[in-house]
Image (cartoon, rainbow, N blue to C red):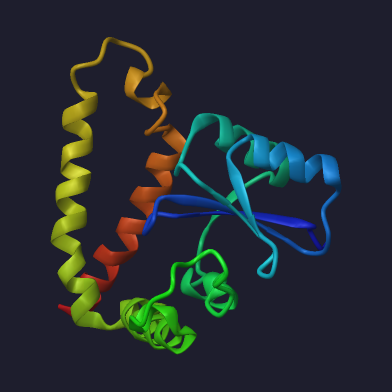
Length: 182
């Protein structure tokens, strides 16, 4: 079965995305924009403007059923917009930022730095493991002082049980690769 929409979450930039296959209806687009998603029309993706929130999580689960791990390089989503700077609103100037070639070179430079193929390199992944371990170690410290029952930290705007599971599964992959490399 071919789903019309796919919901993803990327821990790299803490954003949720909805990838649409085909054109969505007007009321659905309006509802997504009202819930805090911005449309990138050429990429056919809605991007959350504020990161993870319970309201947006509930909406994505209602629309798509599951939230998957995002494996798309996000620079690809913004590349179609590079050459489309409005020049009539800019003051006259001679700086390089007024030339679209400057933005193309800058985007290519950023693309080289942030491309997911770089993240696959073993030294870079191994360097991220201590940082991720510190982040995982700090999570229980914030959740231990809670009362009995579900921790209140799971119900605020930043941390939910589903998000915690996503982040931990993302970090466990790094640990498995480190064990294989050792």
